[in-house]
Length: 113
Image (cartoon, rainbow, N blue to C red):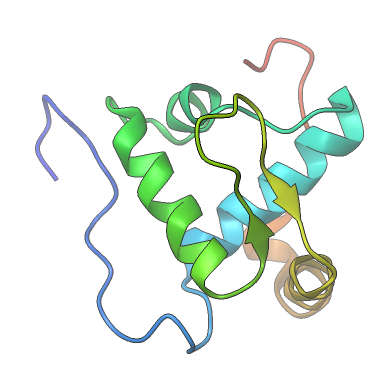
């Protein structure tokens, strides 16, 4: 990650393994965003929230979540992100076990993008 172009670090390994902490943070935030706004965040909003300069970083994390079956994406559709039952279960487990780490992503402030 460079100072001028922050982007999530590349993730390696099988898509069938456990989600990374970054993926869980995006999943928790996405669920909170949907609950607060009634629609999923765009990749631009995710990039802004997590401090990435490029929406490609957010799209990459979403593709990895989709490969794990935690979200569903529809190509060429704005705000088409949907959290699956497995995704909601993973979010609940994550917040139950590690609320201190992911609690900050479980609410949306009024000035959030």
